[in-house]
Amino acid sequence: MAISEKRKAINTIFEQLYTANPGQVVYKFNNNKVKQVTGNKFSNQFDATKFDSYDKLPELLKKHGYFIIHIGQGNHAFIKGNGFHKFENITKRVSWPRSKSYIDAISDSEAQSVSTAFNDKIIHDFLTNNKNSKILVHTARRSRTSYDLTINNFKINIYALQIEIDGIYETDDTIATVEVKNQEHEDFEIRQLFSASKYFLNLKKMQKIPSNVKIRHLFMIRNKMQNYFKIYEYAFANVDDPNSIYLVDCKRYNY
Image (tube, rainbow, N blue to C red):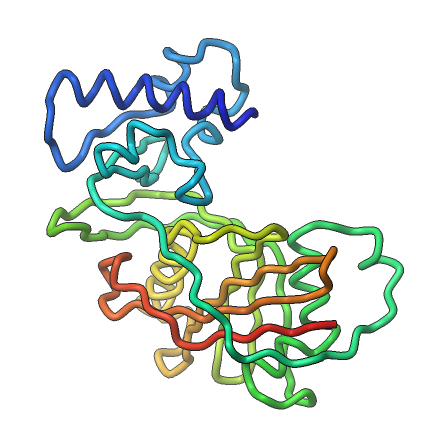
């Protein structure tokens, strides 16, 4: 789906809602509304609502200070506020040995990046500072979760939202989720980490994961052309507020 077509469709929907009721904090819409505007242009209406970085966001949303959140079961909302976080500058840089791998050489998938960071012991260093530590890797997990979030003092209920986690690393006392991009952007959509955070908090509440297991959230960028991995770890000061995100640590691994 061309990004220009996505922007055009979302601009149209936002303009209709905003013009009818100017100045609201939240405007809700759904996939049926997207299909009404786009007709048969897109086979997946949900994809038309996804913008992974601020620069890709439609101009009308930027102008009025809104972004998009997904609230589950084909429902979405424009909400006034900031839904993106700018990557911090990395000062920790290390040279790292690269394993020879035919599979890694021919694959450009995000799942492969999760695997390669594991195979080359990059994730072992970042999580435990020990290449010999025992870590399990799980790639590409889809699930559904429900939770409440608060933005600008406005509470929104998220119900049965489908989420995808690119990878999970697990030790005896830690579970680390990872979101992966194989291209560079100045920022990222906070919901990608926030939904994973809520998902694992819910698993703790249901006692499917022990309460003493630490949950960590990573954002990984791999640049195969320039041969490096960047890893950022983030946390949330307020578990209900995605805008409470803050950096825990970051490091660059150069091959």
